[in-house]
Image 1 (cartoon, helix red, strand yellow):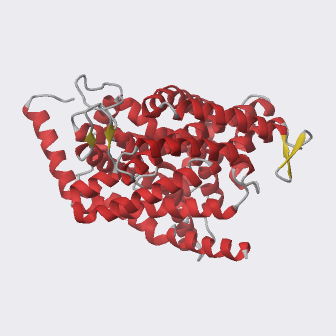
Image 2: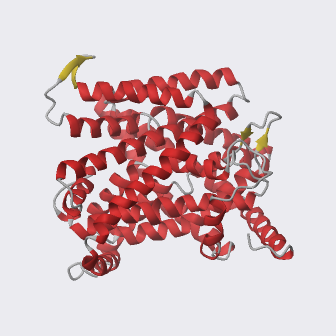
Image 3: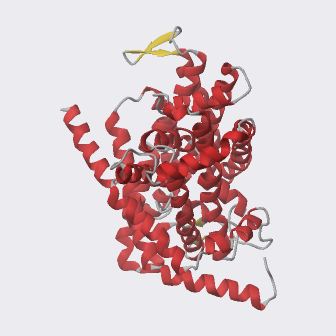
Length: 472
């Protein structure tokens, strides 16, 4: 019976995350790019400047940088390390090219999400900010569409509590720790009728305590922790990958040639070029969307908390999240894997990236594995924090701000983290994945419906900058 349920859920998951949704997300990005005149390219420099220069009199709960780090905490995770490797193994090095393309158009989508989140957010008398797709659906499209906003929140709450925010990330952390400290499971304990390594149990307890200490403190504590961990780990991971790149400089040109040729099926056997290109395209675009979450509607929930009076300004900051996540971090992973040839050794998942680090880094293999384990642990930890915040905001909208319900949810979230290492029910993860995909539909409908508002607000902002003689 359970097997039959898993098969049905698997088919639903494959349908939702199939070609139609991927095309819809990509098409929305292309449409917004055209409507905004390539804003993500023309104003990227300004957007990067805004990250570190906050508005002095902005209204909100956290700095623009803090809001960005909160959003990045949920997007920079195992997808950048494992997801990128999976895409390259399945679709060849050419998947990287399509991942870049998805990110380029996704930046326009992320800009629109961030801008609308600030424009239609609600700020209480105590400075508490609430916003995201649910508010720009209700306040932008009208009260008649409130059902769509609530639908988004139902899916958002489920995703955080039952999967992407808890079980999958916790399993990723404990598996990484177990793989390094006790790979042969020599030290075990019997729990819930099964045998578990002590490394999994201890890692799970420590993780639960750390998550509890942070999430109970709310958005301000989550953003403070994210402001420290996210930049530090991102810079550390990029630096590690750069060591591989620098020590393999002669291979860089051939790596890019391989990526481009593979992207268009030029290396496939006669008659198989189109098929190879389609596989590379599908895997690259899908993984790019999974990684940076452009179009899913999660990041604008964090953007709404930013201390700013300018929706366009925060939209620009938000779009840098996609640039950092995919164009920078995923590229570092991809280049490391392609240059070392780790993608073509019959490995899968994290083992591909582990092999790339072992081959590419001028360190002992054990130390290279330790570095990757630490990156995985911290990336997954911040993803847990980010999705707790997203789910809380969705629940707050659903319950009309009943803080007692939100507090109960916090403890349930912590409990889910605690039992995460011992969860083996495949159906739970599949349901979470389905809900994650379903989140995108209400959000994409709103982005397309409100594209006129996005364009007008953008034109007005840059007109005011020009009129005042300002470039920033």
